[in-house]
Length: 108
Ligand SMILES: [Zn+2]
Ligand SMILES: [Zn+2]
Image (cartoon, helix red, strand yellow):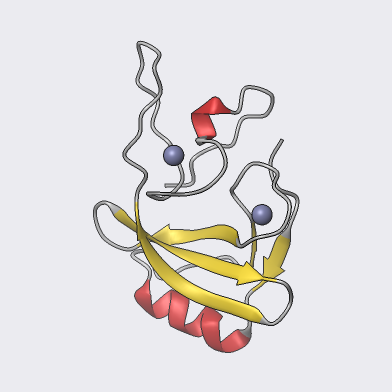
């Protein structure tokens, strides 16, 4: 189960995210990409920055929200296709390929 939390980007952060993203386009709201969790920080994928890193929106509660650049998670799945994880290095919760109930498509 994916985390159901969504966060709308504050205007200032949305502008900064567009300037930093590779494509120049980011969504105005993002869903947390972690599997369902209780408490802690939420992470929504915004866009790739350069090879191996991506821009994420990190938030906790309603007031703490920040742009962060994180390295891609290097852990691939055990199957023959070595499915990559869509999250960032050292994330909490499960890798995206561990989520067998619901597929989270990689947006990158
Ligand atoms: Zn979350
Ligand atoms: Zn991972």
